[in-house]
Every structure is written in structure tokens, then in C-alpha cells.
Image (cartoon, rainbow, N blue to C red; front, side):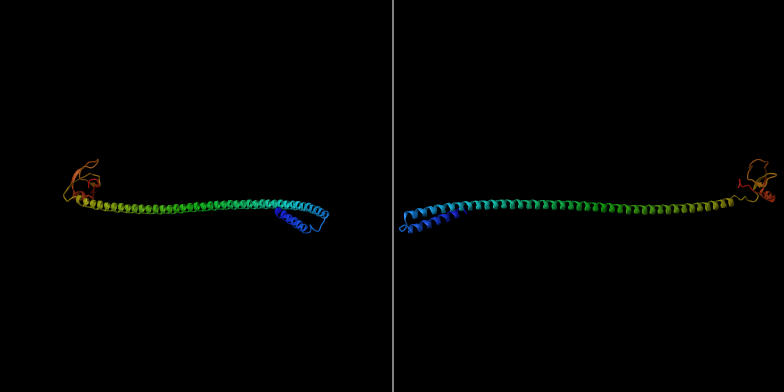
Amino acid sequence: MKKFIKLGLILALGLTFGGCGDNATNETTTSQSQTISSLEKSNQDLKATVSSLEKTVNSFEKEKAEEEKAQNAQQEQKQRELANTKKAEEEQQRKEQAAKDAAEKQAAEQAEAAKQAEEKRVAEEARKVEEQRVAQEAAARKQAEEQQVAAQAQAEAEARLQQETQSLQVAEPAQGQTVYVTPTGSKYHTHKCGNGTYSPATLEVAQGRGLTACAKCY
């Protein structure tokens, strides 16, 4: 800006002096002096104008610099605000992600706990069913064993009864056999059985007296 103003002054002075040179032959020395004085005054006015313009330019440049500074400060403030906003958003996203991860972890833990509880319940039910099956099998075995024991006892009893029957049949005294009797007794014996006075007699005589066989002897 200053260079343009100075260039304008030089051109203006050059034109003025050029015009004076063309009329120098027709003017007097006084006229030239007046012209020079006028030019000097014009020069001073131009200098004042240039100084004013320079001040205006300086003021403009200063205002522009301050405006740029203010714009830069405003831009920096906006950038800081944007950075803070972005940081806050990132922090909020981080917190939300952390909360989401915690919720997913808790849900997974609850699902795992529920799964383990269900597996435990199923295992407990299976154990109870197995225990019940084992108990039923044990009861069935016990019942079968009891039935077997009862059948065996019954078979043994029948065998003993049959053996006793056969023994009684074998032990039945033959006719003419000698037995022992007492005067007041109601039994006949194969030998002296117990206290008393025993006397020999034939089976026919003893039976004729109504005596029966002694249970200890026969």
C-alpha cells in the first residue's frame, strides 16, 4: 500500500514539473517560485495524506491482525471444544462399552450358573432315579431271596415231614415184639424209660391193655 502511494506522488510531481517545463519559456521567475511553493505545499499535503493513509493502513493492518488473532483464537477455541467434545464422546462410548461388556459378562455368568444348576438338578434326579432303581432291585432281590428261603423252608419241612412219616412207619413195632410197661402207665416202651417199675410184655398184650407207643421211644 505504501509503495503505491509513493509511486502516485512521484507521478504527480513528475507531471507537475513536466507541465512547468513546457511553460517555462512563457513564465517569469516569480511564477516559477510560486509554482515551486505551491508544489512544496502540495508535497507537504501529499506527505500528510500519505502519513494519514499510512496510519489508516497501519490501523487497518492492526485491526486485521487483531481480527485474524481473534479468529485464530476463536478457531482454537472451537478446536478445543471439538476436542473436548470428542474426548467426552469417546469417554462416554468407553463407559457404555464397559457397561455393555459388564452386562454381557454378568449375563454369561448367570447363564453358566443356570446351566450348572440345571445340570446339577438333572444329575440329582438321575441319582435319585438310580437309587430308586437300585432300591427296587434290592427289594426285588430280597423278596426273591425271601421267597426262595420260604420255598426252601417249606421244601425242608415237607422233607422232614416225609422223613418223619417214613421213620414212624419204620419204627412201628412188629407184632410179637417185646415191650416194657408199667402197672399204672398208659404207654409202652422199648426200654426202661424214666422212673417206675417196668416189666416186659408182648406188643399184643400192651396194645390189648389199651397202651400206646411212647413218643420218646418211638
